[in-house]
Image 1 (cartoon, rainbow, N blue to C red):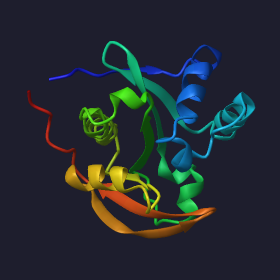
Image 2 (cartoon, rainbow, N blue to C red):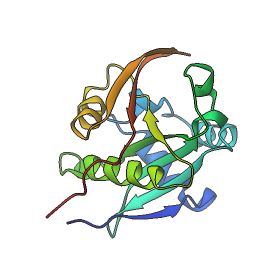
Image 3 (cartoon, one colour):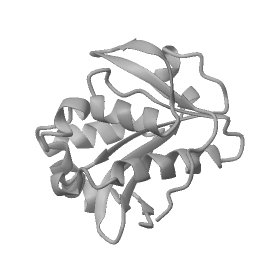
Image 4 (cartoon, helix red, strand yellow):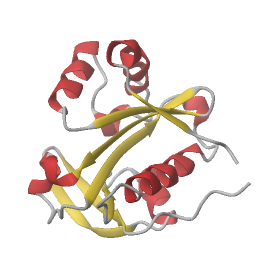
Length: 169
């Protein structure tokens, strides 16, 4: 079993790393943060309610955002309850795709969020065209709760009320 480690995003120290991932062809269409470094800085500043993480398995390979749904602009589009937690994530390096790390990451993030005091549900809202993320979430027990018309995109609302099964070797 691959063990994942999470550490809080270190603002300036991690900016170039995450910025590089945002330029990748498998990331750019979904995050819409490809471009100058200032675009990522603005995103981070506008999302002060989000906890940002770097995840890795000895080497960093993922960027994760976690948040309380009631504190997020998403709350205007869903019936958010106080126990709802949300996440956004990406696997950055293209050479790390197709190795099962995305599934491992979603499992770990949902389990961690559901373990938070007061948490009752975890949601994510991938773009309806993001077949890879949708398949991953549904394969891990996420339930499609509906479709949302968000600013600039249509999203599938996916939810978990219990953590996906642990990854075994």
